[in-house]
Length: 259
Image (spheres, rainbow, N blue to C red):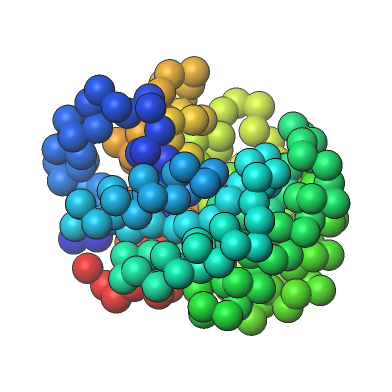
């Protein structure tokens, strides 16, 4: 039987300090199979690596989020690059541009996005891209750096169907999470309907963005069945098929063999 593949979570977050193991203990019953835990700042690099090494079902992505890239230096990036060789690291991320918070300055965000894209190319790992209110510049940088040769996912997708199709043409996956269950998420529902199931992966961004009926509460991978059901309804598919296909997609994204 297929298992739900959680492609993007932050279990190193302090929101999980009290009861992380209790949540993990429920995974099997709720059909949560593998989880990729995603780093975002310098401190989280080692935290994510440790969690991935501790739990057999967990992998990690190592990289620096645009909002946290100010302290980055070439020597710190070189240290991260070394850690990318660890066997449970499956991607570079999350990296990209965030013009919603718009800090640090855009040239700094762009510089470290480009540097981390090239690092991913060198180590032959896919990228996990964070892009918020920066669609055109994200696409331009990806095209300039031939991101189609690197591969990866645009996580927590928030742009138009037209733009999603451009990312898909580059061979990228689109990460869809709890927002697809929100009543006002017209654009994301359109994207879920309009791109092939072969390009969709399930994610939560836990502890953020819990789906309805848990909106506003702490999110966890245990709520992924609600995301799978919402996508199934939008695409006129069986939920079981969505779970199976997105599991296969996540294996292709992160270059993992079938469980």
